[in-house]
Length: 213
Image (cartoon, rainbow, N blue to C red; front, side, top):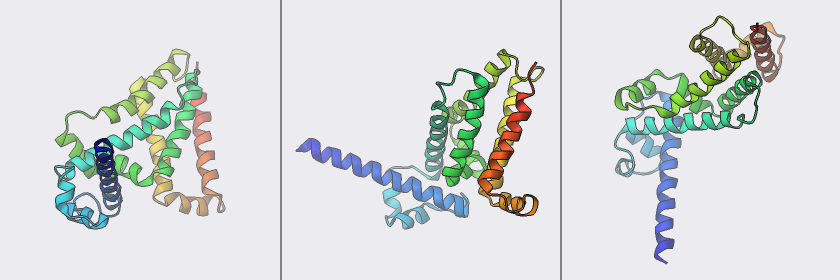
């Protein structure tokens, strides 16, 4: 009986932490970090601010938890591709997975990559950022493996990795912020946005594939 009570308490605790993080993520995306208070988060989930302080010391800890969770999710998207032995095919799969992650989790994506304030808080308040580093390291290692079989000759691994990431980020942000819809309407005769993203990505892949000795 005691174990059942303990389990219910632990489940309630985890459910409440989930509610706090989900509410904070939505409010950060809508209003920005500075304009979102602990009280606003508490009101959204209909609890008192004191309840939130039971689980998170301050807003910085909430931001850090969301960053860790978001990058862990991105790494999970990448790790599905571990079975692909050919590094360039894996790199292509990572590009598609990155787009899927961004479109399926737009609030998380904006928190991770398009909001300067959360990143500043993470950098200033926490020395370690393992999840974020790990996500980029997976890209870096894959690019390095591509270079070992002749791709991207003459390019530094780090710079090539940043260039690939920058291109993918730009494409995802154009879609998430709605800018791609205007480009599609004006330049592609109302082309379906998924088709436009896919064709743009495949064009980039074709370009990258030609960078091989």
